[in-house]
Length: 317
Length: 290
Image (tube, rainbow over all chains, first blue to last red; front, side, top):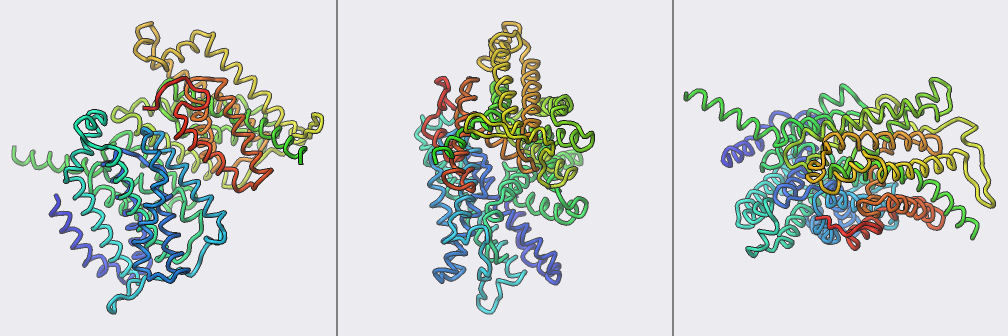
């Protein structure tokens, strides 16, 4: 499975720019879908490994976006340095959420939602820093590295695909390490895992930090891709909802499921659903989420895998 | 200045009454089923738009929308129960995401049908001013508060006196023991959802008559109701009422003394502080959120 995933990625690097590179609109959609995919992977990492469902990943996304924009514009930090720094700043903000780790399931989910709302209001009110609801425009574009223009659609695509691959590799690495085993044991019984000497709070904090970093980085890249920010956009509930739908759709217990789910859901949503119903097309996202939870809570990827196995089994018999 | 503060206190209390009605529905279903119905605010929204339909199409006072609103909200609430009841795996979190999805569906359905415009009652009777000493309000605000208070007290009586009310409380405190005493937990849960729907319907009509509604309101109301439930702690009707009035007054005070943009911030901060510092809420019995 792992090898086929890497093979698929390698094919994407070459085929997608060659096939769609000429079509600016389509390539723009693909770039946006990768941004959603990045957040979906970060969300699933926290949900699957950490066992914590978050309704407020928009908080990290917005903090990352604003941090990178302000660092590059006010302090003149190079964009490619500002992006990882923005990830670290998102981690710094996630420290404020550590007390919420004590809360169980639904309480954690809604506490994070409250943080996201608070951050949005603060971004609107702190006008001296963020220009309030007027927003920040003319955020610097991604730079040109060794003659290759990262600010072109193809450049943005390659940068985001690389980031996504790095996220997936990190996720896989954590899952396979002995931390991953401890985290999986915590799903069954957190108390029992603590008894055998696992510091569960520390592990959960680390998952929160990793997830916040990834989301912050993606938010930062997005700020430099669209070059404009305002609080209602950067902290929009959409950045919390879309990744959840994508991850559940693809299968949030798998590593690659959320990323594939995000690309599929986003592209279908933009190309098909938006054409069918322009306002309120989120109704379809909501329906997809509801149907998935009711009929296939493990997601589409495990479903496909089982179907494939059954077909192979059938041919042997 | 003193008059302003007094007026803010009064307005906050009036709004708090409606908040109590909304939060009680959420708390009721959370008690029996251990499910946070994230579509509860959207049920209120739906009821408010039924009032809009009755007023704009039939030219009637929004009060007459109550039967239609109750029918719609109770049906939807029962539907939420039937769907949530189908979840077998990892029920706590999956039900959260399912009701969240239902909320998104309702909000966008309202947006599709009624557009995103802000709506409120046009009835001059409802908007008439009432003066209580130095304090002012609209007739509808005072009416909504009184109706809410009566319904809260009625629910309290129902929960403590009637057979079904006691069954609801029995199922929330110990489902298996309730079963052994001859209570059908599934039926009790369904009843709690239907009652919650009726409360949401009344709250929706009250909200439409005394304030303004637009599609994103549903989500905001769900969050408010959840904040109140957390403030109150689990299992106390007077606690919910007190927490709702507290939230209403705090919001009104923030708007008067500070800025209307910070209204939401104060509620959220109050919520986080109580959640993190007082895990049993302000009025809850000693029970861990474990």
